[in-house]
Image 1 (cartoon, rainbow, N blue to C red):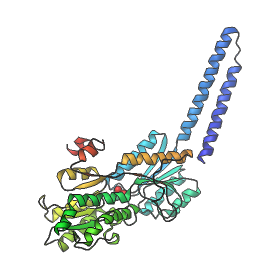
Image 2 (image 1 turned 45 degrees about the horizontal axis):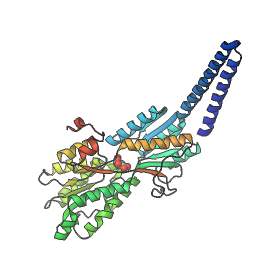
Image 3 (image 1 turned 90 degrees about the vertical axis):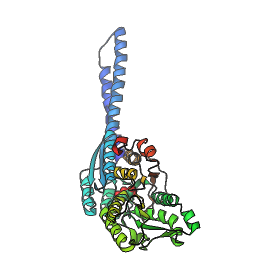
Length: 391
Ligand code: GAL
């Protein structure tokens, strides 16, 4: 559809150029002056043609992009939405940005409205990745391409591309951090153990499943031989996943764990999959009287501003930095590709099987940040200003 629109616009541009050209040939002139004038006219015609062509291309670059985001309850999605809108608008697109506030049905309605309003392309970060199949089929039927943003869209063949981070790699990075920070190899040798509890992501988010896999690939052997001791026994994804990534639920769970299982012994490691969980865990730990003396190692994901501040004051140990500026950039190259009928840059064509198709993906690299490298990665990298972090 876009291709047809582009050829139609270019055809109009060419006709416009011809009309300008014809106009110049009717000018009556004589002698040298005539030659000069003819050359000037030719140049003017060329200029007009180029201008018309540019205008046509600019118009072709334009179009309406629907951006469906999950929630404004966490800082990262506010930044993601703002980045996408700003960058798309700078390229001449009209942007319809909507947040569904973690309500899957509200997201369906928002996407239906985007389609009805004439969206040319949809960018979706799903609330519930499998709940959009009907509206995705409707978009496909209407010839509107869909790009999955950060979270894979499941059970559909209507998605063209996926821009995200290496989600299993996020889990691996969190687990490797724990192994190194607590020197689990030495603990194993010495027959020592650390207590650990898990707070994993939403069951309707494929990222959460992969992240848990990445964590367990590294930590399972230490759980098996007792180097890591999970007193609640809750290590499986089913037992540790938290619907809609709820900070309140993470806090409640942690409070229950601390009273029910950690009355005698301290919790040493809170392995959480998200900065929001780390905030909930922090509140629970403070409520239970933990201090700097016995504060556990607390992990997170997203390197939100608050998480970075907590890392600096010691109430969170690490987070996974996912540069949302880079993610938005990669996603936008996908938007431009589908809008102009070209191929975007892809670096994974095997991992992201959504139960119907394997979605061609671009995966950005996650980076672990803690108090040691925060200045270098986050501040020097321009993600947050030193003064925002009180540095
Ligand atoms: C996931 C995403 C994480 C985190 C989480 C909660 O899909 O991969 O980075 O943001 O959602 O919002």
